[in-house]
Length: 261
Ligand code: SF4
Image 1 (tube, helix red, strand yellow):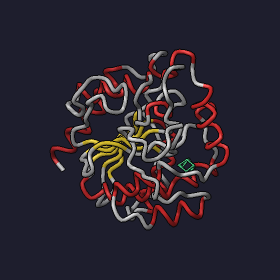
Image 2 (image 1 turned 135 degrees about the horizontal axis):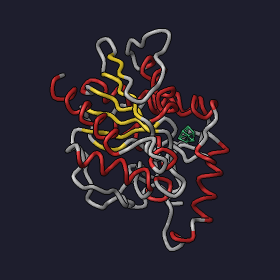
Image 3 (image 1 turned 45 degrees about the horizontal axis):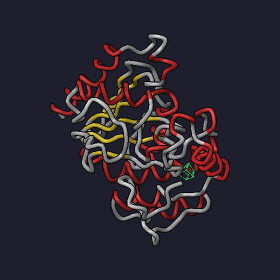
């Protein structure tokens, strides 16, 4: 695990950054973070979910054979990108050997390969790939975030873990929503994590909550437009459930909304 203040390019935390040890402290520390860098820094040292802390650190110790020579991040992964985005992209959780290894969201795994290639085609990323924090990649008017910030076993956080992590997302949304015109939501988990967080961040969310689907578009009163998109996981991209053309269509729509809003 890379300790806070290590000089890692993705590390905003330092030795004095407060650490949340349980769900109540997540509420307190996320709610009292005065700016986006504070939300990012505080969330990347969080230890509120014992199962996820144990898993992310075990993965960082055991490693995948092909990355045996690397030092894994092994900590929560924060949102990343523009501080005042026009487009927000919402994912599920870091991959065990992707974000949990590199310390940057959607970086160093196959899902990220698909996502960054699409962002680059849409003019939202400087480079077509995102391989490691500090690789020169940059998002243009765009920010990536996620519903749960620690890599979960089998990519499945529990409802309790999702609720525990939600205050980090709510705090991030409060800072980025004023400029956000469109939110591309990758997958049903991201959708179900985002809608309650939006409501807590002060956005009027319809009741009953709209259901997730690829191509679903929901304009929130006085808020951004939500665009549903199948997740860029290999389960979808290998099987053809999600194609490059489908992904491009969603991002083209997000760009159009960002231009006209
Ligand atoms: S999942 Fe979220 S709340 Fe739980 S330990 Fe990780 S950062 Fe903290």
